[in-house]
Length: 113
Image 1 (cartoon, rainbow, N blue to C red):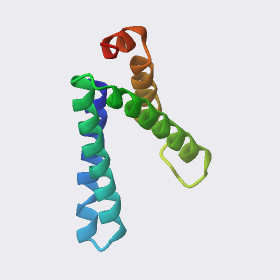
Image 2 (image 1 turned 180 degrees about the vertical axis):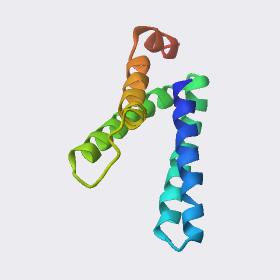
Image 3 (image 1 turned 90 degrees about the horizontal axis):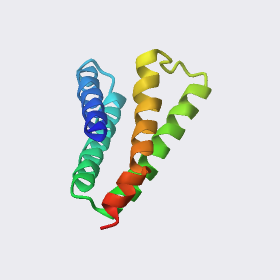
Image 4 (image 1 turned 180 degrees about the horizontal axis):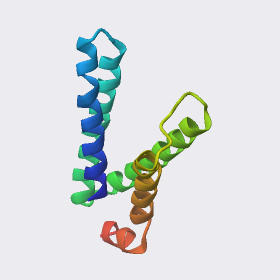
C-alpha cells in the first residue's frame, strides 16, 4: 500500500535526523520528531483506510493534497531544497498517486457501504 510506503519513508527520514542531534545540531531533534509523528499519523491513516473508514478516506485526500502543495512550495522557494528525481517521486508523484487512487470510482464504491 502506497500510504504505508510513505509512512516508512518518513520514519526513515525521522530516524536518520536523530544522530545529528549528538553532533550538536539541536534543531534536528524537532525535525526528526516531526517526521516520526507524520509517520505515525500516516500509519493510523493507513489502518483506517484498510478498515474502510470514511473519515480515513477524507483525511487521506486532504493530507496528500497538503503534502503536494507543501512540496511544490518548497520547490518554488530557492532555499536549497533537493530537486532530484527521488525527491520529486517521493514528495510529489507518490502523494498524487494516492490522491488518484483514493478518488477513483472503485474506492468510492468500496467506502460507500
